[in-house]
Length: 387
Image 1 (cartoon, rainbow, N blue to C red):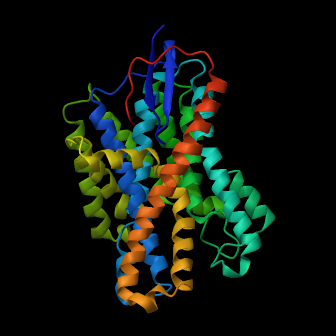
Image 2: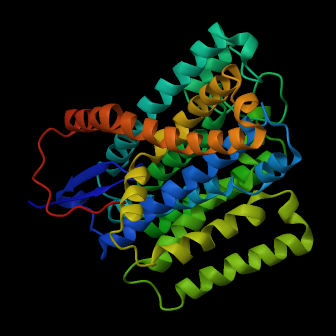
Image 3: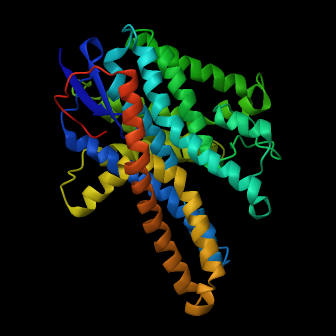
């Protein structure tokens, strides 16, 4: 019985054997490019937060302008990648016995421990440093729902579904997509994907009509959840046996979506038209670029492996650094703008180092340990792809 080893959307190795074996990509370099895109997406979010925090000691209009640039498209690229990788790793398991359970177990093992760890850090911060928190505050129900990945309104806001770890709102969508995709695996691929899309559409329309709780209405009425389908469409267009015109059709769809969005004004109110269609074009443009083995490429691949940790951990890093810069009065010593750019570079460098250390010393070993617990007897891998 052969086994094939690849990695899931979070960069962890995943093994399958027998009927649930997953065919590797034709080119490992293409999947390494996906890792690079994950690194760049996480860095884009970090850059925006770095510009925001730098305003604590340099409240400059220039920094406000730089912060307002669409760095947050990194989140949308993440979602496109997630849909693509879900199909890459699980396309052959639709309708197979045990596929749903195996899929969800592995996703829970990969998503939950890091998220719970950094959520716990935020809970501790809200309890011990409540007077220094901008918007985060501890409420037992809010914290519990955050740990359980249940969408709910953020205390004090009527239009935000942020958990206590604010950027964890993206993980609420990830977990929702995992559950929905796992259910789709009960059917064959055509029926499963059709049911998945129809289900998402009905939830979106129901939320727009106000049929659910306030939190779920906000959650399901956001068109960002359709970014996952753009990732699925990207896999369908890029797979080895894709229809010759599938890629052209997807590019045409994305371009048409952008034009229609800005022509009608939908891009001002719906993220699908503003950022998701551009995100899938970015993915398609980069996917087949030759990567090479330069030090920069290897560094980005490594950071792509740790991008989930980078995403979750960097708010703590940039906040600690800004507090340190303010306390040490670096801007008074060096001048405001020299201190600003030193701080900004330190945010990127230190955040990357912290993420890589945490990933290699804690996240990856724990994940591998838990995976061995649920699948202790597996054949040796025959091939590895970095997805």
